[in-house]
Length: 207
Image (cartoon, rainbow, N blue to C red; front, side):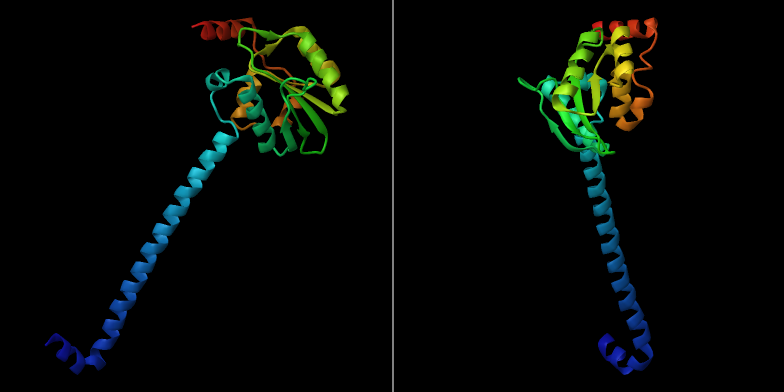
């Protein structure tokens, strides 16, 4: 009966029927687009989270628990994140003092020495001299020393005298949180904290 009435009055009813069909179609298309957008956003968020993990963004406590090789891989990933190219991890026996090698974003060649030491230890000057030897051996232009601890005063002075980029624990935390490697030459080892600050490192680590 409804079909007969609709057919009899089609001339009057068709605009309304067309509007209902169009609204239904538009609504379905809108829901499909909304779902597709939500899915794309969720996937993009997952990719960003994975990229953040791959690029570092771990706590310093997690870094302290890494093996030496894992720490070198982390440093290499952070270098790549900041635009360094041809980055390779070469740490291990026979590395001739270079744990990571590559090119800085400005094209200069770099050698990176990575030392994952307990926070209550310190990097002595002889470690800096070893890196200077590695620079010469590999013919690199920039030396970068990255550590989970601090530098002794003689080591820090040696870095300044010879243009070694000294990345101590606090700078490593900033780098891991998004600061750029290229911002560190301006600091070059400063910001290690006073004696009380270092005492807090020891107390926290010992507990």
